[in-house]
Image 1 (cartoon, rainbow, N blue to C red):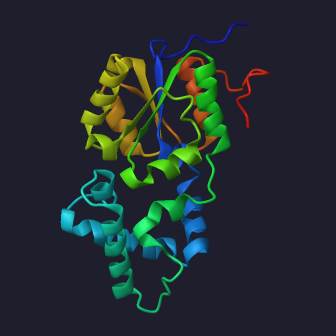
Image 2 (tube, rainbow, N blue to C red):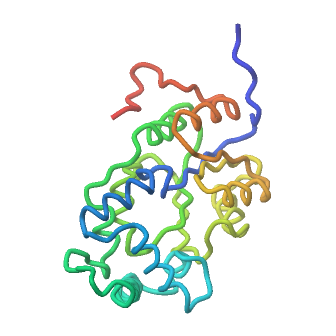
Image 3 (cartoon, helix red, strand yellow):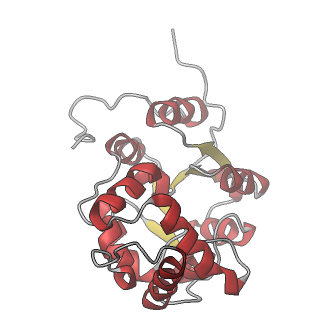
Length: 234
């Protein structure tokens, strides 16, 4: 019996988010950072929120849009934490070089990375569409380990617009030379998935690798298992 026809046969390029998709789950990253520095998730997030308040933007937007440098952002977070938690020892935290410490020792989520490699092996074009930070570039790219596979990286801090702004989807599609409906986004945030679909893209809400694999099989016909000898797993 033949496999069902793909629901979105016109898709030519799959765009994977980094944070929360290719990266380890965010809960794991926060827990790892606490082990490294002693700063718990709630305290860190409160510091980030305080650092964003002068801009009137979502928590990570100022640094993901390049409106503030990493050292400036780190100093603002440190100041907010010291005011709220004067008892907390920050001596292990290098907040002015946050990205290097946050990503140190981390690796990509292997099943998601394998999905990206499998998509490329099956003839799809692949890219990364990420809200990210200029100074974090070498660190997150080392974690993702897909530079030799993807044909494009659209990074909010480089282009000055971030998901879920429709402009970033238009920019990515133009960069790829494809109409909106030929692109598909894999992202963990519902607002980004909704924005991609509103921009004419297909999209998959990533919650766990197995479910994402099944949805990609349904939409574009990507097999859920890598064929023997492809070298997808690492």
